[in-house]
Figure 1 (spheres, rainbow, N blue to C red):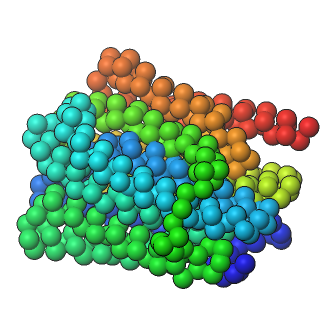
Figure 2: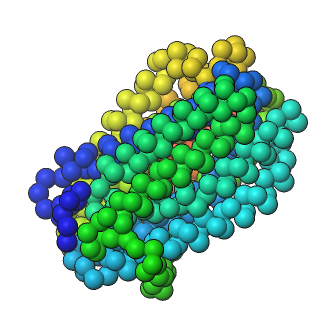
Figure 3: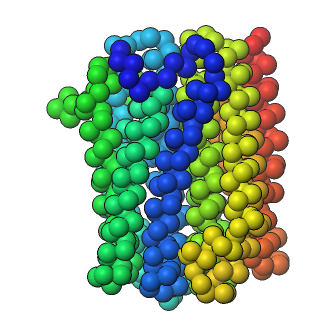
Length: 446
């Protein structure tokens, strides 16, 4: 097996390897969000706040289905990592082909879904009348690029299963640069507004996916890819679905609760939608540090659990929790302290800025708490227990938020009160997930 771009997760020190794995992954996702947020920033500064609101308010609706299938890529990561941990080299290539096949199937489904539901879904979300037509256009164009989003995510999952998180970073970096340049050309030069930033996003996704596929084609066996040999192994596909579907459903149901919250935001008007959209970019960026260390927890645990290194799995939990909380906390502090300066890059409208700063203080500043439930959930998924953490997180971070919108927010009708649902739900979910983790870990040791 080719050792290039590979981390030995089964032997030696752990912290340095976790950091080598997680930090490029975190920066790749932050970089992606920075370039994606250029969509919001460019139309906000060079077009109108309505265009900014139209692009930004799409986020939760888009994530509704994208997260479901991106979650499946976690299953691909775990299956390939499991075969590496068991040293079952002959099965790795079948898992690679199955993963890429599933990505293409998922992408085609998402194109059809996105084109069909754009206006009904955005209407259901109470998207303001002055932005809904622009929002529908962005939504539909965005989903034309779904097959390339899926190829990138599944292909990256394959590379990360062996510890390679650097090449997915460079793939995103190049795609992001393309996105930023095309945003400026299409919006400022050709005055394409929302259409321009949507087209730039699709093209950037094509570039990132093409690089990942190029890397896989040039990989040495058993990680190499040839489209002529694409196949779907039934057993691998079922295992990917078993592990990835709960994670994907968690992401989608998260999006449902966030759609309910976005609907509540939209009821407060276009200024609230635009302000929330600006701050939401930093919500995503800080969360990506959580996601990176959670992915490290999944991958390192999966390999070591499959190899029977159970005490090493415990160390993975401790180290990813510590490193994830520290790095995310630093990112949250930066967003809270320099909120006005950062948000001014997106808008100079004082009313929009006011709403954005409220979200930064009441939600983004506390996002480090997500580590406390996401990382235990990631470790459990790495050990093959995907359903329980999903159920707990859905109850704490989805059901509770929906209840909050229809009770607490309905009574106060206040944007700050609406944002308070985030730290409240994170705290409750963290306690429940930790209890589940220690209970299952005690049972495994016995």
